Image 1: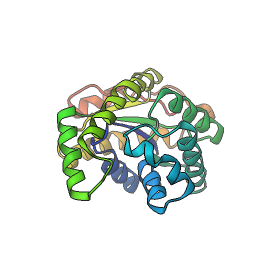
Image 2: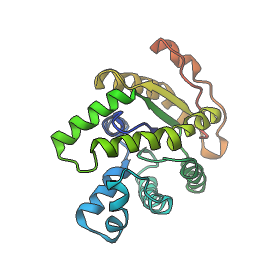
Image 3: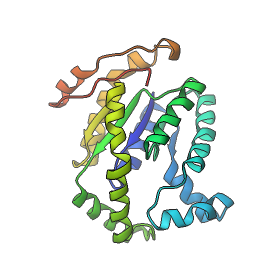
Image 4: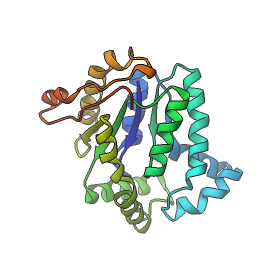
Length: 224
């Protein structure tokens, strides 16, 4: 199973990404964690991105994509599945990831969108900042990150919808309930996506999955 996640900061993509990765036994590629690790270790990459993170700005595409390519190659060697958490953040990254996936023979099966309200996201992020002492989660930085998400990242949701691989889930509910909905949907898709070769990918209609959740679920295709 190959899943990429699109969500505003604080929507729980790290938590849900880890649960999905554990469930399907695939690598969880969390770019935010990787970047913060570089900053903490004061590597050349960490020094290059530190100011971007502290100001709530997007890290330059070339840095992120190089890091993701390295992780994707390792994921392919480990079996080809992954949960990609933290990219794409803009249309340039989305298209580059698609081309990278085609090159490596491991395009995403599902683009998982976690939807949440800004006020709840602010509350969650401020609480997390107080608990974890994260300097990049001040109120000013959070507002900037949310604005960036709405202006730059959220528009790619419709692009994945047009490609037929979007699964959108309400992330305002308890973690366990959100996880149950996600895993139920992904398990329903697994028999198809696990057995369709990359070069033979075709449109698969998963709209009927919405019946199980009481709302419409976007169609998905294993050729995403």
